[in-house]
Image (cartoon, rainbow, N blue to C red; front, top):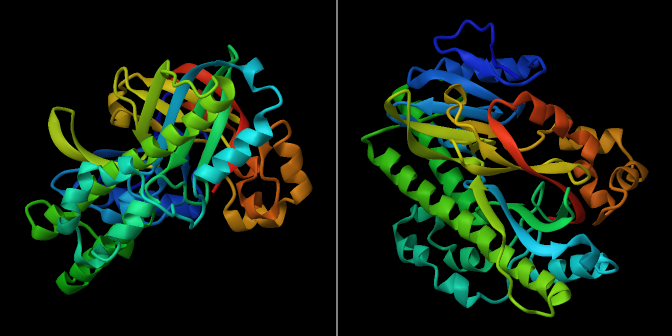
Length: 393
Protein backbone atom coordinates (compact mmCIF):
# COMPACT_ATOMS: atom_id res chain seq x y z
CA UNK A 1 0.00 0.00 0.00
CA UNK A 2 1.41 3.42 -0.84
CA UNK A 3 1.48 5.81 2.09
CA UNK A 4 -0.69 8.90 2.26
CA UNK A 5 0.20 12.36 3.54
CA UNK A 6 -2.30 13.29 6.22
CA UNK A 7 -4.14 16.58 5.80
CA UNK A 8 -2.73 18.30 8.86
CA UNK A 9 -1.63 21.90 9.24
CA UNK A 10 1.76 21.13 10.78
CA UNK A 11 5.28 22.39 10.00
CA UNK A 12 6.34 18.81 9.35
CA UNK A 13 4.19 16.43 7.22
CA UNK A 14 2.84 13.17 8.63
CA UNK A 15 2.93 10.12 6.34
CA UNK A 16 0.67 7.19 7.18
CA UNK A 17 0.62 3.54 6.10
CA UNK A 18 -2.58 2.89 8.07
CA UNK A 19 -5.77 2.10 6.19
CA UNK A 20 -7.95 3.67 8.90
CA UNK A 21 -8.56 7.29 9.74
CA UNK A 22 -7.02 8.52 12.94
CA UNK A 23 -9.40 9.34 15.76
CA UNK A 24 -9.47 12.83 17.28
CA UNK A 25 -7.03 11.96 20.07
CA UNK A 26 -4.70 10.16 17.66
CA UNK A 27 -4.78 13.09 15.23
CA UNK A 28 -3.95 15.51 18.03
CA UNK A 29 -1.02 13.33 19.11
CA UNK A 30 0.34 13.19 15.54
CA UNK A 31 -0.03 16.98 15.19
CA UNK A 32 1.74 17.58 18.49
CA UNK A 33 4.80 15.61 17.43
CA UNK A 34 4.86 17.07 13.90
CA UNK A 35 4.80 20.58 15.39
CA UNK A 36 8.08 20.21 17.27
CA UNK A 37 10.84 22.37 15.71
CA UNK A 38 13.53 19.67 15.65
CA UNK A 39 11.52 16.95 13.88
CA UNK A 40 13.29 16.02 10.65
CA UNK A 41 11.57 15.95 7.24
CA UNK A 42 8.37 14.09 8.24
CA UNK A 43 6.79 11.72 10.79
CA UNK A 44 6.01 8.18 9.57
CA UNK A 45 3.04 6.24 10.97
CA UNK A 46 3.01 2.46 10.60
CA UNK A 47 -0.17 0.48 9.74
CA UNK A 48 -0.65 -0.66 13.36
CA UNK A 49 -0.65 2.91 14.72
CA UNK A 50 -2.69 3.65 17.86
CA UNK A 51 -2.74 5.88 20.94
CA UNK A 52 0.34 6.01 23.13
CA UNK A 53 1.78 8.44 25.64
CA UNK A 54 3.14 11.63 24.13
CA UNK A 55 3.59 10.01 20.73
CA UNK A 56 1.54 7.41 18.87
CA UNK A 57 2.52 3.77 19.19
CA UNK A 58 3.51 2.79 15.67
CA UNK A 59 5.29 6.06 14.89
CA UNK A 60 8.78 6.68 13.56
CA UNK A 61 10.20 10.07 14.52
CA UNK A 62 13.50 11.34 13.12
CA UNK A 63 14.96 14.32 14.97
CA UNK A 64 17.92 16.64 14.55
CA UNK A 65 20.02 17.23 17.68
CA UNK A 66 17.23 16.30 20.10
CA UNK A 67 15.47 13.29 21.62
CA UNK A 68 12.12 12.82 23.39
CA UNK A 69 12.42 10.25 26.23
CA UNK A 70 8.66 9.62 26.47
CA UNK A 71 8.53 8.92 22.73
CA UNK A 72 10.90 6.01 23.28
CA UNK A 73 8.72 5.04 26.21
CA UNK A 74 9.22 3.22 29.49
CA UNK A 75 9.87 -0.27 28.12
CA UNK A 76 13.19 0.67 26.55
CA UNK A 77 14.39 -1.90 24.04
CA UNK A 78 11.16 -3.89 24.05
CA UNK A 79 11.20 -6.19 21.06
CA UNK A 80 11.06 -9.68 19.61
CA UNK A 81 13.30 -12.71 19.31
CA UNK A 82 12.70 -15.81 17.19
CA UNK A 83 14.58 -18.90 16.10
CA UNK A 84 13.76 -21.47 13.45
CA UNK A 85 14.53 -24.89 14.90
CA UNK A 86 15.39 -28.09 12.99
CA UNK A 87 12.27 -29.78 14.43
CA UNK A 88 9.01 -30.69 12.67
CA UNK A 89 5.39 -30.39 13.79
CA UNK A 90 4.88 -34.14 14.23
CA UNK A 91 7.54 -34.16 16.97
CA UNK A 92 5.28 -31.96 19.12
CA UNK A 93 2.39 -34.45 19.22
CA UNK A 94 1.12 -34.97 22.77
CA UNK A 95 3.76 -32.65 24.27
CA UNK A 96 2.23 -29.19 24.11
CA UNK A 97 0.81 -28.97 27.64
CA UNK A 98 4.00 -30.25 29.23
CA UNK A 99 6.09 -27.84 27.14
CA UNK A 100 3.97 -24.92 28.32
CA UNK A 101 4.20 -25.97 31.96
CA UNK A 102 7.97 -26.40 31.81
CA UNK A 103 8.47 -23.05 30.06
CA UNK A 104 6.32 -21.35 32.72
CA UNK A 105 8.44 -23.05 35.40
CA UNK A 106 11.79 -21.97 33.94
CA UNK A 107 10.95 -18.39 32.84
CA UNK A 108 9.50 -16.03 35.48
CA UNK A 109 6.48 -14.06 34.25
CA UNK A 110 4.59 -10.97 35.44
CA UNK A 111 6.39 -9.22 38.31
CA UNK A 112 8.34 -12.37 39.19
CA UNK A 113 12.11 -12.68 38.97
CA UNK A 114 14.70 -15.45 39.10
CA UNK A 115 15.65 -16.71 42.56
CA UNK A 116 19.24 -17.16 41.45
CA UNK A 117 21.38 -15.33 38.91
CA UNK A 118 22.61 -17.42 35.97
CA UNK A 119 26.33 -17.42 35.29
CA UNK A 120 25.51 -16.21 31.78
CA UNK A 121 23.75 -13.23 33.33
CA UNK A 122 26.40 -12.38 35.94
CA UNK A 123 29.08 -12.52 33.22
CA UNK A 124 27.31 -9.91 31.04
CA UNK A 125 29.74 -7.07 30.31
CA UNK A 126 27.02 -4.46 30.81
CA UNK A 127 27.20 -4.74 34.60
CA UNK A 128 30.57 -2.98 34.47
CA UNK A 129 28.76 0.21 33.43
CA UNK A 130 25.91 -0.03 35.95
CA UNK A 131 27.65 2.44 38.30
CA UNK A 132 27.46 5.08 35.53
CA UNK A 133 23.66 4.86 35.18
CA UNK A 134 21.25 7.42 36.67
CA UNK A 135 21.55 7.71 40.44
CA UNK A 136 17.84 6.89 40.71
CA UNK A 137 18.49 3.23 39.84
CA UNK A 138 21.69 2.59 41.76
CA UNK A 139 19.86 0.42 44.33
CA UNK A 140 18.38 -1.81 41.61
CA UNK A 141 21.38 -3.80 40.33
CA UNK A 142 20.50 -7.02 42.18
CA UNK A 143 16.88 -6.77 40.99
CA UNK A 144 18.03 -6.08 37.43
CA UNK A 145 20.29 -9.14 37.55
CA UNK A 146 17.49 -11.35 38.85
CA UNK A 147 15.05 -10.03 36.26
CA UNK A 148 17.35 -10.69 33.31
CA UNK A 149 15.84 -13.83 31.81
CA UNK A 150 12.26 -12.96 32.85
CA UNK A 151 9.28 -12.18 30.65
CA UNK A 152 7.23 -9.45 32.33
CA UNK A 153 3.50 -8.98 31.86
CA UNK A 154 0.99 -7.28 29.57
CA UNK A 155 1.43 -8.29 25.95
CA UNK A 156 4.77 -10.02 26.51
CA UNK A 157 4.74 -13.68 25.52
CA UNK A 158 6.67 -16.82 24.65
CA UNK A 159 5.34 -19.00 21.83
CA UNK A 160 6.11 -22.23 20.09
CA UNK A 161 4.93 -21.85 16.50
CA UNK A 162 4.69 -23.75 13.25
CA UNK A 163 5.39 -22.25 9.84
CA UNK A 164 3.60 -23.21 6.63
CA UNK A 165 6.12 -26.01 6.07
CA UNK A 166 5.49 -27.48 9.54
CA UNK A 167 8.84 -26.30 10.87
CA UNK A 168 8.95 -25.52 14.60
CA UNK A 169 9.85 -21.97 15.68
CA UNK A 170 10.33 -20.42 19.12
CA UNK A 171 9.33 -16.77 19.43
CA UNK A 172 9.20 -14.35 22.35
CA UNK A 173 8.39 -10.72 23.13
CA UNK A 174 9.93 -8.79 26.04
CA UNK A 175 12.00 -5.74 26.97
CA UNK A 176 14.19 -4.16 29.64
CA UNK A 177 11.96 -5.04 32.59
CA UNK A 178 11.90 -2.87 35.74
CA UNK A 179 15.35 -1.37 35.22
CA UNK A 180 14.41 0.05 31.79
CA UNK A 181 11.15 1.38 33.19
CA UNK A 182 12.89 3.12 36.10
CA UNK A 183 15.61 4.62 33.90
CA UNK A 184 12.96 5.97 31.52
CA UNK A 185 10.90 7.45 34.36
CA UNK A 186 13.97 9.19 35.83
CA UNK A 187 14.84 10.87 32.52
CA UNK A 188 11.24 11.71 31.59
CA UNK A 189 10.89 13.48 34.95
CA UNK A 190 14.11 15.41 34.30
CA UNK A 191 12.88 16.45 30.85
CA UNK A 192 9.57 17.73 32.24
CA UNK A 193 11.35 19.62 35.00
CA UNK A 194 13.72 21.29 32.52
CA UNK A 195 10.84 22.25 30.22
CA UNK A 196 8.99 23.81 33.14
CA UNK A 197 12.04 25.77 34.30
CA UNK A 198 12.72 27.01 30.77
CA UNK A 199 9.10 27.98 30.25
CA UNK A 200 8.86 25.80 27.13
CA UNK A 201 5.26 25.74 25.96
CA UNK A 202 5.05 22.18 24.72
CA UNK A 203 1.84 20.90 23.08
CA UNK A 204 2.04 17.96 25.55
CA UNK A 205 4.20 17.69 28.72
CA UNK A 206 5.15 14.16 27.61
CA UNK A 207 6.99 15.68 24.64
CA UNK A 208 9.68 17.17 26.88
CA UNK A 209 13.02 16.70 25.14
CA UNK A 210 16.78 16.87 25.57
CA UNK A 211 19.01 18.83 23.20
CA UNK A 212 22.23 17.31 21.85
CA UNK A 213 25.36 18.68 23.50
CA UNK A 214 23.78 18.96 26.94
CA UNK A 215 24.63 16.83 29.97
CA UNK A 216 21.01 15.65 30.13
CA UNK A 217 21.04 14.41 26.53
CA UNK A 218 24.34 12.59 27.07
CA UNK A 219 23.14 10.95 30.29
CA UNK A 220 19.88 9.79 28.72
CA UNK A 221 21.65 8.50 25.60
CA UNK A 222 24.09 6.50 27.73
CA UNK A 223 21.31 4.95 29.83
CA UNK A 224 19.16 4.36 26.75
CA UNK A 225 21.88 2.35 25.01
CA UNK A 226 22.54 0.38 28.18
CA UNK A 227 18.85 -0.51 28.61
CA UNK A 228 18.52 -1.45 24.94
CA UNK A 229 21.44 -3.85 25.32
CA UNK A 230 19.91 -5.23 28.52
CA UNK A 231 16.63 -5.90 26.69
CA UNK A 232 18.40 -7.70 23.84
CA UNK A 233 20.37 -9.93 26.23
CA UNK A 234 17.24 -10.55 28.32
CA UNK A 235 15.58 -12.04 25.24
CA UNK A 236 18.68 -14.11 24.45
CA UNK A 237 18.75 -15.59 27.97
CA UNK A 238 15.06 -16.55 27.83
CA UNK A 239 15.41 -17.94 24.32
CA UNK A 240 18.27 -20.21 25.39
CA UNK A 241 16.21 -21.55 28.31
CA UNK A 242 13.14 -22.24 26.17
CA UNK A 243 15.32 -23.82 23.48
CA UNK A 244 16.73 -26.23 26.06
CA UNK A 245 13.20 -27.22 27.17
CA UNK A 246 12.20 -27.90 23.56
CA UNK A 247 15.43 -29.83 22.89
CA UNK A 248 14.81 -31.97 25.98
CA UNK A 249 11.48 -33.12 24.56
CA UNK A 250 12.28 -33.23 20.84
CA UNK A 251 15.99 -34.14 20.72
CA UNK A 252 16.62 -36.02 23.94
CA UNK A 253 18.44 -33.01 25.34
CA UNK A 254 20.94 -32.82 22.48
CA UNK A 255 21.85 -29.20 21.61
CA UNK A 256 20.77 -28.04 18.16
CA UNK A 257 21.72 -25.12 15.95
CA UNK A 258 18.97 -22.68 14.89
CA UNK A 259 18.33 -22.51 11.14
CA UNK A 260 17.61 -18.76 11.52
CA UNK A 261 17.82 -16.34 14.46
CA UNK A 262 16.24 -12.88 14.67
CA UNK A 263 16.41 -10.41 17.60
CA UNK A 264 14.99 -6.93 17.02
CA UNK A 265 13.91 -3.95 19.12
CA UNK A 266 10.68 -2.07 18.47
CA UNK A 267 10.80 0.59 21.24
CA UNK A 268 14.14 2.33 20.91
CA UNK A 269 16.26 5.07 19.37
CA UNK A 270 19.48 5.02 17.32
CA UNK A 271 21.57 7.41 15.24
CA UNK A 272 21.11 6.63 11.56
CA UNK A 273 21.67 8.30 8.20
CA UNK A 274 18.51 9.20 6.26
CA UNK A 275 18.23 11.49 3.25
CA UNK A 276 21.98 12.07 3.54
CA UNK A 277 21.84 13.42 7.11
CA UNK A 278 22.64 11.86 10.49
CA UNK A 279 19.52 11.95 12.65
CA UNK A 280 18.19 10.29 15.80
CA UNK A 281 15.47 7.82 14.78
CA UNK A 282 12.98 6.93 17.49
CA UNK A 283 10.87 3.89 16.70
CA UNK A 284 7.95 3.78 19.13
CA UNK A 285 6.33 0.48 18.24
CA UNK A 286 8.17 0.03 14.93
CA UNK A 287 10.91 -2.29 13.65
CA UNK A 288 13.95 -1.33 11.60
CA UNK A 289 13.48 -2.62 8.04
CA UNK A 290 16.57 -1.58 6.15
CA UNK A 291 17.25 -3.55 2.98
CA UNK A 292 17.81 -7.16 4.04
CA UNK A 293 17.06 -6.61 7.76
CA UNK A 294 15.18 -9.50 9.35
CA UNK A 295 12.25 -8.48 11.53
CA UNK A 296 9.34 -10.02 13.43
CA UNK A 297 5.73 -8.81 13.22
CA UNK A 298 3.50 -10.77 15.61
CA UNK A 299 -0.27 -10.98 15.54
CA UNK A 300 -2.34 -11.60 18.66
CA UNK A 301 -2.23 -14.78 20.78
CA UNK A 302 -4.67 -16.43 18.39
CA UNK A 303 -3.43 -15.07 15.05
CA UNK A 304 -0.57 -15.51 12.62
CA UNK A 305 2.83 -13.87 12.98
CA UNK A 306 5.35 -12.97 10.30
CA UNK A 307 9.10 -13.17 9.87
CA UNK A 308 9.98 -10.46 7.37
CA UNK A 309 12.88 -8.94 5.50
CA UNK A 310 13.12 -5.19 5.05
CA UNK A 311 12.90 -3.42 1.70
CA UNK A 312 14.60 -0.22 2.92
CA UNK A 313 11.78 2.20 2.06
CA UNK A 314 13.24 5.70 2.62
CA UNK A 315 9.94 7.41 3.44
CA UNK A 316 9.36 5.05 6.40
CA UNK A 317 12.92 5.69 7.60
CA UNK A 318 13.46 2.03 6.71
CA UNK A 319 10.84 0.85 9.22
CA UNK A 320 7.79 -1.40 9.46
CA UNK A 321 5.07 -2.18 12.01
CA UNK A 322 5.82 -4.01 15.25
CA UNK A 323 2.63 -6.07 15.34
CA UNK A 324 -1.08 -5.93 14.73
CA UNK A 325 -1.65 -2.99 17.09
CA UNK A 326 -4.53 -2.72 19.53
CA UNK A 327 -7.98 -1.73 18.29
CA UNK A 328 -9.46 -1.83 21.80
CA UNK A 329 -7.91 -0.70 25.07
CA UNK A 330 -7.39 -3.30 27.79
CA UNK A 331 -10.36 -1.92 29.74
CA UNK A 332 -12.66 -2.01 26.72
CA UNK A 333 -11.51 -5.53 25.81
CA UNK A 334 -12.56 -6.76 29.26
CA UNK A 335 -15.92 -5.00 28.94
CA UNK A 336 -16.68 -6.25 25.43
CA UNK A 337 -15.59 -9.88 25.64
CA UNK A 338 -16.17 -12.86 27.90
CA UNK A 339 -14.05 -15.82 28.93
CA UNK A 340 -16.05 -17.94 26.45
CA UNK A 341 -14.97 -15.54 23.68
CA UNK A 342 -11.34 -15.97 24.71
CA UNK A 343 -11.64 -19.75 24.71
CA UNK A 344 -13.20 -19.68 21.25
CA UNK A 345 -10.66 -17.26 19.77
CA UNK A 346 -7.66 -19.22 21.10
CA UNK A 347 -8.97 -22.63 20.00
CA UNK A 348 -6.10 -24.95 19.10
CA UNK A 349 -3.56 -22.99 21.15
CA UNK A 350 -2.16 -24.42 24.38
CA UNK A 351 -2.33 -21.32 26.60
CA UNK A 352 -3.92 -19.75 29.63
CA UNK A 353 -7.65 -19.26 29.13
CA UNK A 354 -8.63 -17.23 32.19
CA UNK A 355 -9.74 -13.72 33.16
CA UNK A 356 -6.11 -12.72 33.74
CA UNK A 357 -5.42 -12.64 29.99
CA UNK A 358 -8.85 -11.53 28.76
CA UNK A 359 -7.43 -8.10 27.85
CA UNK A 360 -5.13 -9.89 25.39
CA UNK A 361 -8.02 -11.53 23.50
CA UNK A 362 -7.27 -11.65 19.74
CA UNK A 363 -10.31 -9.48 18.88
CA UNK A 364 -8.73 -6.58 20.82
CA UNK A 365 -6.13 -6.32 18.04
CA UNK A 366 -6.28 -5.15 14.45
CA UNK A 367 -6.46 -7.89 11.78
CA UNK A 368 -2.83 -8.82 11.13
CA UNK A 369 -3.48 -9.69 7.46
CA UNK A 370 -4.68 -6.14 6.82
CA UNK A 371 -1.69 -4.69 8.65
CA UNK A 372 0.64 -6.79 6.49
CA UNK A 373 -1.15 -5.80 3.28
CA UNK A 374 -0.67 -2.14 4.20
CA UNK A 375 3.11 -2.51 4.39
CA UNK A 376 3.87 -4.67 1.37
CA UNK A 377 6.13 -1.84 0.19
CA UNK A 378 8.10 -1.93 3.45
CA UNK A 379 8.82 -5.65 3.91
CA UNK A 380 8.72 -9.00 2.18
CA UNK A 381 7.39 -12.03 4.07
CA UNK A 382 9.96 -14.74 4.79
CA UNK A 383 7.81 -17.05 6.93
CA UNK A 384 4.25 -17.17 8.28
CA UNK A 385 3.94 -18.62 11.78
CA UNK A 386 0.96 -19.89 13.81
CA UNK A 387 1.36 -20.52 17.52
CA UNK A 388 0.53 -23.88 19.10
CA UNK A 389 1.79 -22.92 22.58
CA UNK A 390 1.54 -19.44 24.11
CA UNK A 391 2.90 -18.42 27.52
CA UNK A 392 1.63 -15.00 28.65
CA UNK A 393 3.13 -12.71 31.24
